[in-house]
Image: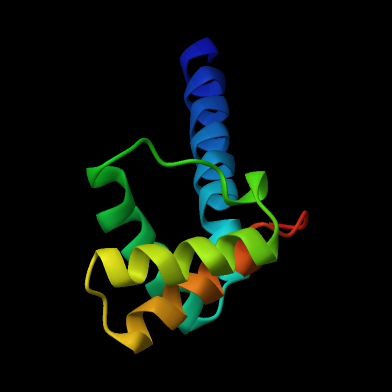
Length: 93
């Protein structure tokens, strides 16, 4: 009986962690999710990824524009990156 209780508790804990991890992405639009993938795939090539909450919309917009040129992103890719970063710095994500 003890093993079943522990097993059930572990399953509930794993489900909770999974739901928490998926929860923030569920609040992103499809374009913002694509921007997140760009951020995760490209930005950590030169430096550690930082939380989007560490900068304002204006700072992220300037950074996305600056690094979009540096990384030779297409204008649409820069827009996706900007959309993700300016959404992800909101307190409810």
